[in-house]
Image (cartoon, rainbow, N blue to C red; front, side, top):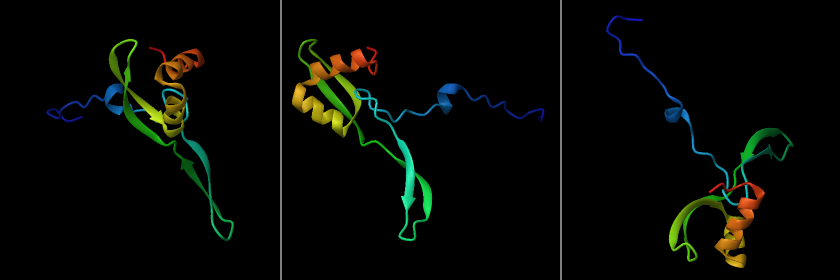
Length: 96
């Protein structure tokens, strides 16, 4: 190492990426194959349809931000945010 070269320290916080996992259902990317007309196969990833959304919880009178999948949004529209959060806590996906 050179005498005057600055020391580069990389911590886990700078390297760590945000996970691409739904916080309510646990959906994440799957691995599969692209299949051409000639049946050649190459590896690919099927990413979950994730989006960051804000939800209002009237029982607690506050807003929360969650990274949710499209299917989780359908569940929220059907059952309500409070019921879906309760299920996610029971299944171990949400720990707050």
